[in-house]
Image 1: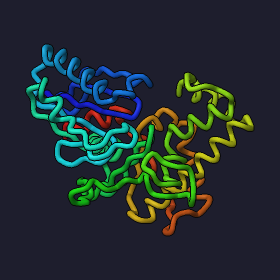
Image 2: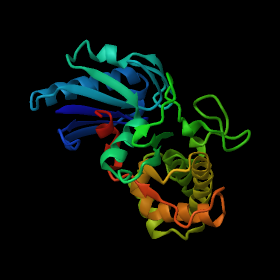
Image 3: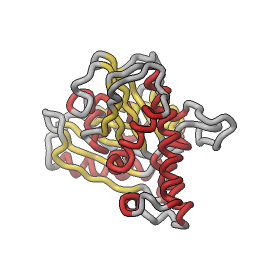
Length: 296
């Protein structure tokens, strides 16, 4: 068995993966604001404790870690949503964990999992997006990740969709993820409705489901769908995939967002090559895709 770890901008999830590629046990936690002040210590202490606990229950052969950001070898070169640079997480963990450890960009991990056993398994050419704290992405061609050389590429979240737009953590202005990440949607809803950051995503989802035609809610959701449509249609026009998969916390909101997204792209005629059917599907593995894909 293997252990897969998914590091997000606001959470850590650790799962034991069986030989069929599925999770048999999982633990996770939300990263608190105070923990983010010393993010490396928070990450390492949680991973080390839980890996040691899981090793007592299972025969673990290796560990895979899915990380948002640019990866080179065993090092996180840059992760704007984790606020770390030149962080050799593997080297630090191996001081306490005597197992092979590999790391890879989280969106690419999720894309691999979805293309092998998830929502994209029936397609040769696909695009995968993770919508969460930021936006990550990957391109699958003939069942394999698009090779972009030494650097991972496919930083979809940092393509600029708004000239002189909102300042991004990466230092640029107008990045896709500042408008179309799930964090952007949730923050904009909270601000419009006068809610504080303790209002959880599930509460916001319930508000959309019950009061979707409320003027304030509808305005925020419609704006979000418009920005998401622009980014997704740009990617479709470039890569012409058979299907687009969307993961991250978007999956939990897919019943109120997915059809709006597809209809908006089609109705606004954003696609260069029109399609009778636009295939955009939620990740079948949900937020577990990163955990599973990290071990592939």
